[in-house]
Amino acid sequence: MKRMLVANWKMNGDVQRVRAFAFAMNQLLARQDTASDIVFCPPALYLADAKQMLPLNAQLALGAQNCHAAVKGAFTGEISATMLMEIGCRYVILGHSERRAMGETDVMVMEKAEAAIAAGLKPILCVGESRAEYEAGNTVEVLSRQLGALHSLKAGSFVIAYEPIWAIGTGLTPKIAEISAAHAAIKSVLGSGTDVLYGGSVNAGNLREILALPEVAGALIGGASLEIESMIAMLAIAAA
Ligand code: PGA
Image 1 (spheres, protein in one colour):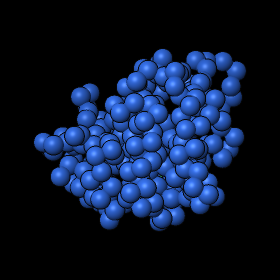
Image 2 (cartoon, helix red, strand yellow):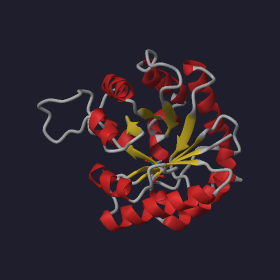
Image 3 (tube, protein in one colour):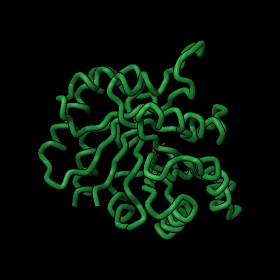
Image 4 (cartoon, helix red, strand yellow):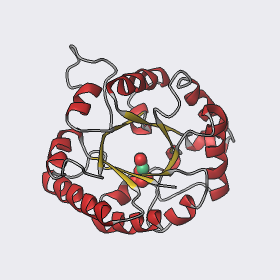
């Protein structure tokens, strides 16, 4: 199975680093037979810089970290899915816990997902429980609530990223059996054909055992995606 690695740079990087990363990743993908998919999600204003470094038939896909639910209008500071499409994106991360912490709700995530799909983008929809919810044993319940809002989306038009909030940027990860169970729970709600990524403190040291799970279609990677060397190591693991 072709694995997907999503490099979520969050609010990190600069023009030079974005350009260098985009070029290097695409070169690497072009050389690989058993290529995995890499989706590079730099800050939105660098997407055009990344795009400029890529040939027309680039294997590296670009993604944004957010979009607005409306096609256009009086929404100062916002970016529409159509604009992201126009600039060359194929994906958009939606509902990341860092955005949910800024007030994004399940309904808003669903509306953005609908707008993204209508514009031709494939949303990567993030779900996951907090530390307190995890400790209370409520992971599946939280996931069911977050996924409930996504029922109307057409199967295959989106990807889910299971990201326990307590695992993001902390160096902590759930046990492998817990990742497996959460992915199975997500598939039982949305259908077994739904691609589900794992995210939260993924790095070259733990990626192999996470990707060994048949339920895991790939990884959403934050901190460890910022360095080209670490991406090269993870790509080699994903392609093995
Ligand atoms: P992390 O971030 O890999 O730095 O934990 C993952 C994410 O937030 O998508």
